[in-house]
Image (cartoon, rainbow, N blue to C red; front, side):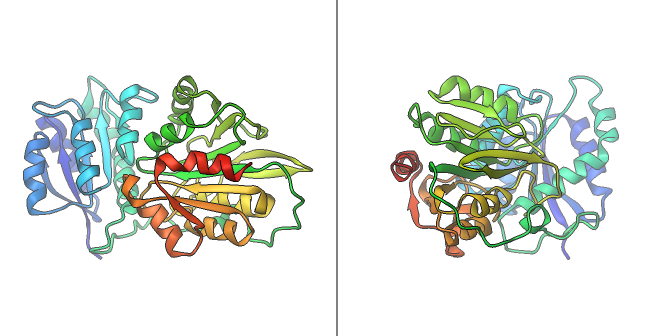
Length: 355
């Protein structure tokens, strides 16, 4: 199988050389080139397209965030941010995820070379994970030997027929990935006070989801918070799955709540949209209204089909308003979508569907 080809974009010669040495040491990765800034990177992209880009943020002539946004608008490529200004929960890190970065590595302001060398395994794993998250199919992306086969939601919640569910208050389940932080902002800002209970899986690194939820909570009329195990689903509230933990919908009588648990990667992700949607099919069925939004890959597509088969009403974001159409497109292909809508129409349609 062909190697994962990486383009390194960083204005520091030391960092470029260190990253090249580290990534090239893995037999499944090939550094196709380096660039001192986004302009040099753009020239390289005219000639050949990598599988993954590692990208600094503070650079001359054009900053990394601007370049990231241009990449995602023109031709989405998995991007790993490697920067000293993208610390956990910072506005810069959240903006990078909002623009479509797949992974973030925070470099220290001093001792960068030593830090990168000591973080060799983490760096290689993040580049491989980014490659696996990509949607390009022009050539196969090799699966790292240490990564287990792609697992379905069976690994967390075995598939079973939904029981006979009595009508209850409608609830909303949402899944998103690349570009989803901005899509969720638009979606949640449009929710009225007293909106239906909402549970969200957004692919995001560990420790970032709390800051993301807090930021949304300051912008929206409803309450937005990072989910904790046992949190009740309540009107006027949105729960966001914590990074690196799965979130499932559960039911006790007529009351809905969420379970937050550990588990293997499902559809290459933790949290996984497929896991949330399968639990919704089992415990919510026709009481669920679900939406799948912008994102790379196919996480959520199978789960959405299960939801529809269980009687839920399902919505996919349309291609024109997506940063990356991968996840909604796969859900549509699998026959799990009742309605395809632009981003600005999803919130009012969910409010209508929930009565």
